[in-house]
Length: 597
Image (cartoon, rainbow, N blue to C red; front, side):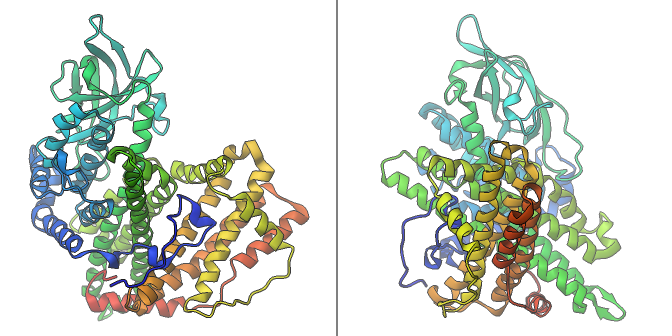
């Protein structure tokens, strides 16, 4: 267990870019309490015993089946883990609810229904409802008696959520709002009891409403036929003179965007948790197939090409895990800090989630792309069998694809990542200008590749510090050159976002290994160290490429050549045998018969 830990003030969202993070303050999966491990095992058992044996029935949308599974999960307390006890929940922290979400991640369409209900289905009422609304709805949603859904998207408004056309007009007697319009892609829409729906009052006041199933003028369309997550209920909602009691207005009139945007922050974080559960399950599935499958009288798991795939699947999954739980604890700590300062539970939670909205957006992007990579390579490992519906990996492949689209497309989240950190810099909440100027001055100096740090992983610490300098160099130059036109240069912004994602991930991995080695009281395994070093080595090349692509888009002449020299300096790493490292990682998984990190 952890002994002496260096404590510092909690870093603000985005501050990791300009300040040092302390390994001892960093939460890692090895920090799980015994209770959390028990909850994790409970979640996995639920998937293995209640969900996996009936996947085919779930996929066929058997009436009543998904709601019954949801209710069983609710009876175990798994739907209300993060709901305060006074509203029927367990009152657990974000880390614990993340563990449940991850444990359900291999549950295909059930996980989709679960995350929609516990996230966007329940959170708007829990965190924005008045006391009467909370007491009426939340306990039954926490128990699973009532299921929740969320109606924001419309046929002509996807990423532009505020462009919704659904209207709400106050009735003549002032007792109801009359809603007219439609919503699409509503997860859980076919069986939900409670819906949070957004409409515009008087044509411009974007507002949220609580609508119950059976409300006059409220109907739903047939189930959508989707490429994946076929067992997830997805319908359109129709409102034709739908009468919603005025007491069902959720939050403030004209402030619906506050609800919509805040709910997305932890929704993005939780999506990363779900994708990691799916990635671990798909990695294990593919590895076991590779061990059993023989070609040329040899298990294909012994071939270097297959070992490379298996190892890379594990590397990306472990990295995402490291970044996700690091972020989850920062959100929990910030929430506790706000509560200690007198904030209500809802304001503390929302404030903490908003503080780390940058990190949540990055996690959503990386987590969804990790799962897509893992299932794609999983199909490849299965060969022709991977293209057959008779093999589970084909389901994993189809189901994965949606994750890069909902909770904000990955393109939108990349743009938001940079937009949010630059806005915070302009407001003065993060000092980016000082460090960026220091990096510019460093370019004019003679490079010093030495280091006074002789501690373990000193080289890796230097690499990560230099990656941050590369981001500051490119972002600072982009702001100076493009100024007010920067938001129109989406390619440049996405280059910077990818540099940020790689750097945050690299630092998270390094902090985890250092904590295991120095602070936690046990050495990191050879495989964990291999994972960290391989990721950092490969990230250096990706950061180099993204930096040069961005700089080439807006700089030229001597200035461009000088900045290219700087990027080369900041992404320089010593040779590392990644082939041998990946083979060690794969061999460890083969020995353990699955993902084991």
